[in-house]
Amino acid sequence: FRPVNKWIDSLSHWGGFDRPMIERLGKCHNLPGLVGTTPQDFADWWCGHVEFVRDFVEDHPSHKLVEVEIEAEDAGTYT
Image: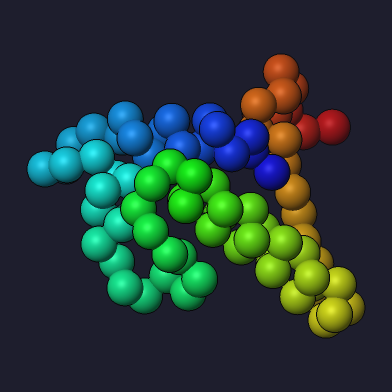
């Protein structure tokens, strides 16, 4: 998955709102497992969420998980 530090940086600088996305998400009460509003809290939550999804797909073989390295040079190509 995307390097978590880059995800946090995106959340912290995502414009077009009255406050940064990381602050907006910190006020959400419907993100299971999110405790706190620091960048490390979000990093821990995100990594746990990714692990949860991977485990879910592993436990449910009828599901398929596609992971894309969006930081890769060829991320936008299909071969």
